[in-house]
Image (cartoon, rainbow, N blue to C red; front, side):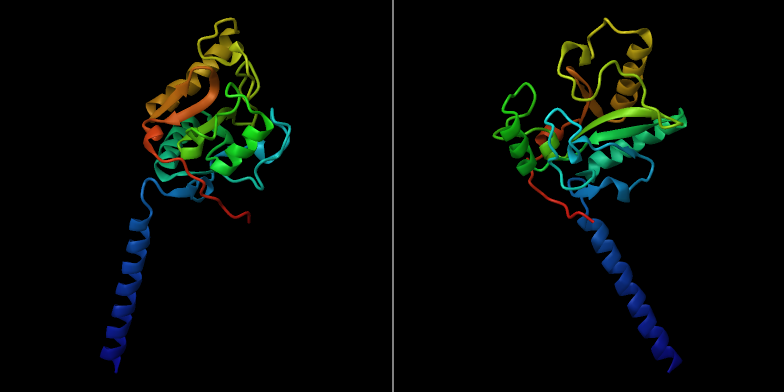
Length: 209
């Protein structure tokens, strides 16, 4: 009887281990995942889940940051490095379903401000983040302009800024680039994962908890 029970327990644990392994394998680098399931060290200020944005409209139903797993891995690595230096990443925007891109385009149909949904953006591919940095007290570093400021002052090459602002932007850019991200010239806050443009535009949705 004891041998039979031991055998059944062994079969049960083997089956459980196999199921867990299958679930891990099912999550590929291009699978969409929730950032908070992989790290609790980020700060969130998801602008498009509020009306505090240039659209003056709430286009997300809830505050969530979904990205492809490979983007999450790179972002977590970058954030760990910032944390070692006394800072952490604050997120403004992450993956953006194509339906949301269409809604934004209906509000502001200007390709200088909103990517044309007919082409899609890296946000629609789960490979882009809009971010800044906060210090140990939660205070945002001075980056010279607000998020989504559409003017030359927001560009990486703009020089008529204080030395502190330029240092802050270089600090953000350097760590992000070292961890596999590429900056966007006209927006200090926008970073794309390298080669993310090769992924497909997606309309994957998430449920609000």
